[in-house]
Every structure is written in structure tokens, then in C-alpha cells.
Image (cartoon, rainbow, N blue to C red):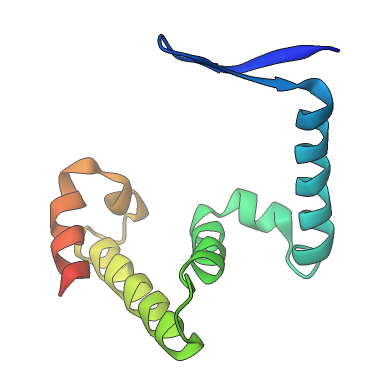
Length: 109
């Protein structure tokens, strides 16, 4: 059996069989086929903002009702867009760690 060390920490290594890793990759491929066929994946790869909005649509549910999840998603996107506008329409503003506190405080409101 071939084994590959995925992560090695000083306390313990995380070891997985190559077959297990291949299964994980196959599940990823199936996910792409099942859920991403309606999206232009290259577009999302080239436009990080569209990719981020796609991620938000998939990750904000977390067991909440759809109406609440959609409101959280909408408000988050609005706050991030406002931050971008405040910084001269520079989308990198939301990636600048100096702006994280402002964004975090606004999201908490």
C-alpha cells in the first residue's frame, strides 16, 4: 500500500493512503460535474469577485432558513461593495488587512 504524508506537524503526521486521496479527488470531480456545470468556471477563476459571490451562495446557509441566508449573503456583499467604493473602486481594498477591522465591525452591526 502506498501512503503519502499530507500534513506533518511536530506532534503527529496525517497519513492517508493514495487510494483515499484519489477518492477525495474523484468526489471533487463529481461535485464539479453535478453543481458547477451551469456556471462558467473559467469566468469564476478569472474574476475573483464572481468566485467569492459563488462561494457565499454555497456557504452562508449553515442550517438557517433560506430567507435569512439570502439576507446575510446580500448584506455581506453590500458591505464589501461599499468598502470597495470607499477606496476608489479598488477591489483589493477588501483584501487589505488594514481594512479588516472596519469590515468586521460593519458586518457585526
